[in-house]
Image (cartoon, rainbow, N blue to C red):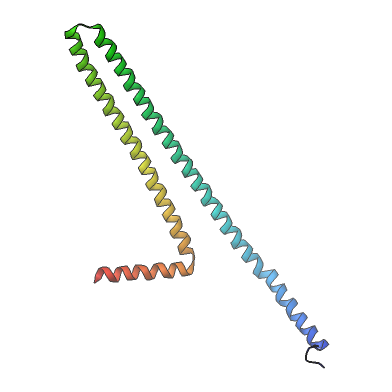
Length: 166
């Protein structure tokens, strides 16, 4: 028997043990691994769909706020034009009164524009805040799904608590 040529019996038992190991892995190991990979893939796809939906909602809010601002500007222009036409037609006393009314209307329109703009910005900020919280929650969940991420997060929190107590 040579050092490089194995004996027939040894080959038989090595092949048999390898076959048993492969059978066990195919029967019990691979299905579990494939199931976990499929679950992770589904979770990632769901997260991507939710992020896309949130992006679309944010874009819709932006378009709506732009439309409201444009509408307010058009209303302001219309009010200004009406006030200007009324001021040209009336006599000096009526001109003074018309200018005062126009100024009030313009101020009201500006207040309304500011109010609508603030409402739109508040809604956008609220949406962004909710999205940020959702994204942070998902990132933390992803990070905490990993054992090393959990240990790192726990150690960092313990260090923070220790620093704050000092």
